[in-house]
Length: 365
Figure 1 (cartoon, rainbow, N blue to C red):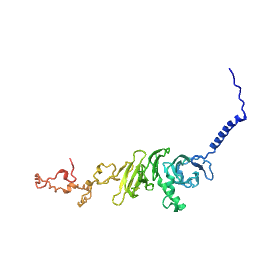
Figure 2: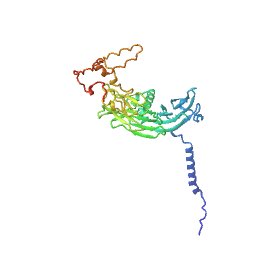
Figure 3: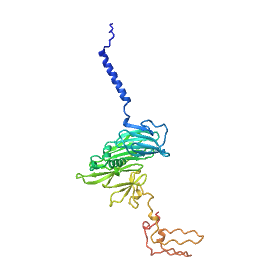
Figure 4: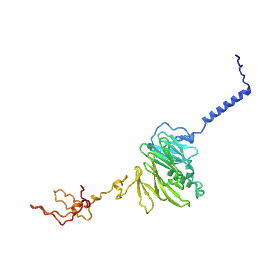
């Protein structure tokens, strides 16, 4: 059995090994000095990029503001507690989802921050959001001042973000003219995304939300560019959404935690929609009122219990006597009862017989 002699490393054979070592060392150095993902920086008062102290606060203890980042101040003293910023981006709008702060940035990023320990929970990039916030290419965009551009961006950021405070599991919707997305606040997971139909765009500035759903009106045009009937789409995270037809200028107004009022022009009367039951409110007096899924708040008055128009008021009871019970509508229409005598009263053969079904207020068997 022959043995190969030990190989002697020559200068030429050492060069490749040195090159590999240099590449690895450079990669390790680059990895150690790479920027923080998304440009996140959390700093305390007067600090450039140092972590805040370990004191844990709740959202109720802090006053949160936006600009240029997410700034937290102690409510009791007014002193700054911490500042969260992203390099190259400016915070435009803030909304709460439960105890967490949701921030919309001018570069189209959306971030969830836990105020108690100033930790970043998740980031989400929304396609097309940054372009819509800037409004570049729109008619008159080149004539806007810097102040007008910032005001427009802040207004649109507020229209783009809608937080739904569903009990135990808040979620949020992000709306742009060409896309709407639903995210679970717990982890930023994308639960749905939807685009409007051809010839239609969503109108984020008309969108509203309740504690159960987000309602987004859409505007549609025909081939000639003329406005035609659009609609309103409702989105939920715990069940299927819904859609209803509406005119191009329909407005939605929030009434309470679950109900909204939809106004669709001067001809069609406003209607109330319950986003918890996902059904419209049925008006009193409607034919299907007894079978309505959603009845008006406060219920409908029972017409059989209403006093008869023009009926005389009940006489006042004497002192010490119990008040007389009000006469029923049936009693006021019946003929007077003759006084009791020893002889039986003769039947009145002249009175017309009225079917039981036609007697107002009569008790049915």
